[in-house]
Image (cartoon, rainbow, N blue to C red; front, side):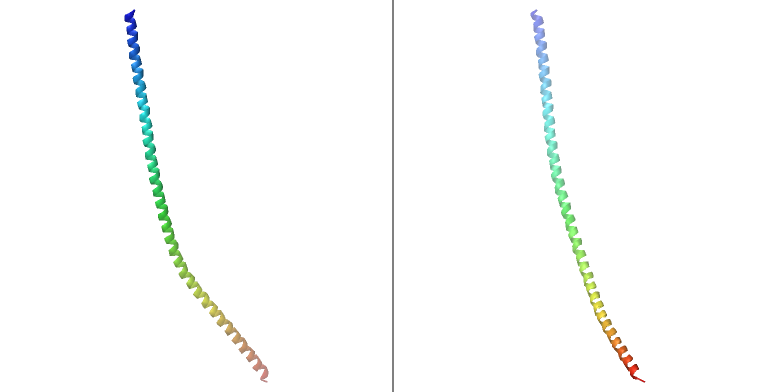
Amino acid sequence: MSSSMSMTESEEQHSSSSIDDISRRAQELVEKINNSRTTDQKVLDSFQEKLMEKVMEMCQQMKDHMYTIYEENSNEMQVKLQELSEVLESCTKLNSELTEATQALGSLRGGLAISETSDP
C-alpha cells in the first residue's frame, strides 16, 4: 500500500508541478500581452502627437498662403478702385460739361428765338 501511496503522491507532485508550470507560463503570456499593449499605446500616442504637429503645420501654411492671396487681391482691387474713381471723376466732369453745353445751347436757342421774333 505504501508503494501505491508513493506513486499517487509522485503523480500528484508531477501534476501539481505541471499545473504550476502552466500557470507560470500563462502569467508570463499575460505580462507579455500587457507590455505589448503598453508599447502599442506609446506608439499610437507618438503617432497622434506627430500627426497633430503636421496638421497644425499644414494649417499654418494654408493660412499663410491664404493671406498672401488676400494681399495680392487687395492690391489688385486697389488698382481697379483707383481706375474706377478716375473714370467716375471723368464722367462727373463730362456730365458737368454736358450740362453747361445744354444750358449754352438753350440760351442760344432762346436768343435766336428772340431775334427771329424781333425781325419783321
